[in-house]
Length: 365
Image (tube, rainbow, N blue to C red; front, side, top):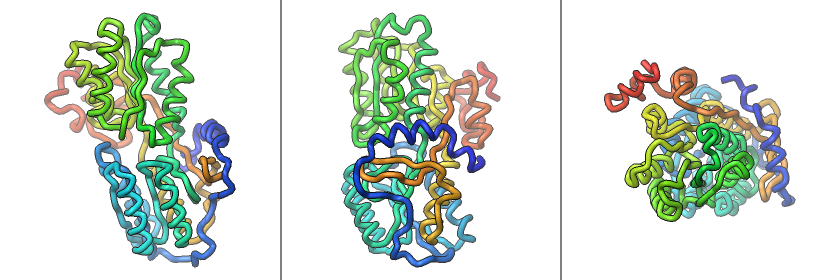
């Protein structure tokens, strides 16, 4: 995907986040103490967890591939996964500093808890790229998707699925973790579409985004609302959608729309089978490429002007050079034109024996 695609839909995100900035810190360049380097750089990559399939399957290999490509295969990538533990991630930052990485890419477990570690890296002359989630502290660059648009896309899809029945019962909102700033933006975007058009019976901020927590929340919601009154579920991602659908099935509830996000293979298969209505397809390659480009440029003491066309404010840092990537609603009608066309999955990946009949029914062959 061309670099120009990165900035699609960025204006709204930049405006919405700008209101959050208030601190005196300002991101935007590599440390003044950093000498210009060649291709022999050391790039640190910290990802937040390994329960969501995307991080190990897509993000890590894509970032590593692009870093190697940009440095004539001379750069070294040092990788660690925090497994959803903020304290572990802070220790990993300390280790990266000790290992003297030239730049750090961080997808924060907890955007606020990482703040002091980001400051430590900055003090050590190591620029930091916030990846996928906008970490607090003196961040030098940021790349993610237009998160409010993600929520709006989910909300619009749910309304479409509900149609004339939108106010005939109640929906459940299964939002992401309260420690993830993206989750708040997804929720805000969804509510901007759903409020006043549906009745929200229960709403949860799901601890650690874990499917088992979403499952437990959903069981509680079914008990509180009643099976006959439940008409749909807003799920902030595919992993939680899996837990939600398990709870629905156990309660004997079927044929109600459930949203998702990330286009995980299991989520796509549930869409094929009809148990999940939609997901949000977020093309990982342009996000990973942007992170790699900004990281290499920062490590080499170069300007980010040719890569980062937008500015975003966090609660602690203003005017962070940013790349925001467009998203797309994924339903059974466009699987062929999205995840298969882009090479994320093959038909064989999706249409295993369990799903072959469903695939045939929608013409996925």
